Image (cartoon, rainbow, N blue to C red):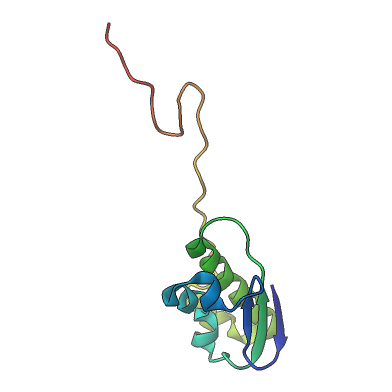
Length: 112
């Protein structure tokens, strides 16, 4: 992610946010930090995201924008923290256990 003072242009993986995320809700989710701090036209933002789905990438973009805003303007930290924009989603895929076909699935039990 790269944030520079500018006119408010946002580029996600070389495309406009709506063209990339394909849903207005995800674009609003990703740009929440800018809307909250009223900095929509203060910075140009270039984002590169890989992996996961579009919703997860929108969440990662939101976190990245919030962290970048804090580096640019440290006084915004309380505002962003209060709205929960600096909290990383810690959920990850559960590992596969030995003796089982998947993480939670069990082999069929046979009494006889």
